[in-house]
Length: 279
Image (cartoon, rainbow, N blue to C red; front, side):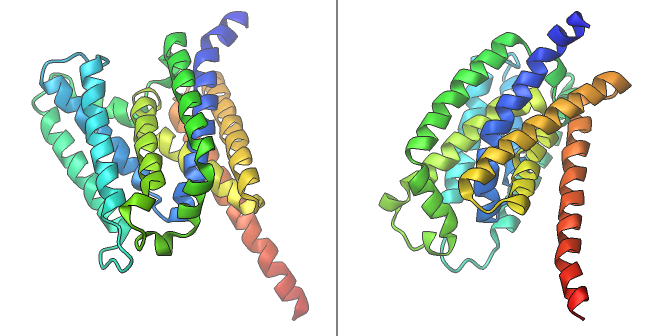
């Protein structure tokens, strides 16, 4: 029993830490209406990694990470800068195009890299069970620094999030908190996707924030409960995967995803019931 706890401690702690920072970004992303930006950015980061591998660098080398950072941050900066007040092409369409291009190029590069198909599979599913204490510590320090920066400028970032209709009218000199938001978001994605995979990062980003938004209205409470929900779902998923001998990432995804749908359905029933009683 003790050996099992020691073995599962790093992946559990990694998910809890990631749930906190991703829950914060998730609330902003839901409010901004750019739901699928995480998948697109994660795929761009994976594409950067594959280019690094094609150039002959080791998968976890600093050079590969640097290439992923450059690709990810450039795409996010471009996305934040092209927003205008009246945009004929919806933002979700632009995000979808970025995702398809990045995925298509990754599939093409996979044909040229030994073990390329296995790398794509690992990018999707992650490798959370084998995360080391060193990676957990590194992510903890990095996310603590990013969290401190976000806390300092939270009011300005939140104002831009809650006033997206007017954000396109502001000059670039007043939109630097938006750039800060996207740059730090890109850094978090680059660090979490290789460990947890695209699907798990996406569900930790969206599902806890969606559940919190259904249950509480206060912005601070939504961020707090997003962390709690994401952490609880991660612990339940990893525990269930260990007991049933199933993949941990998909288990967490299913638990948080189904929880979101069930709570949303129950909220819908609660709204309809008083209307029927009045009739």
